[in-house]
Image (tube, rainbow, N blue to C red; front, side, top):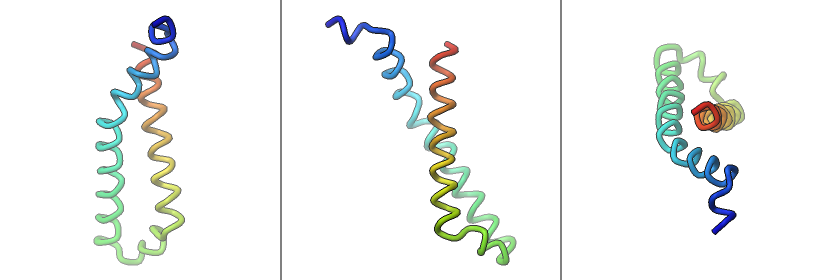
Length: 75
């Protein structure tokens, strides 16, 4: 009972509430930008190879986690 009422656990739990919403938004924007860029400029297909996309997705998730943590800490 005591560990659940700790500040660390309650903060982590609130942060987990925000991840799905932010994740859907930012990953959707990333995928939309990727497809639009390749459609408009086919020469950009080289920029969006597998390793670059994996890095972009990992960077996007890092951004999502940072934004969620910031929101929970500030509020």
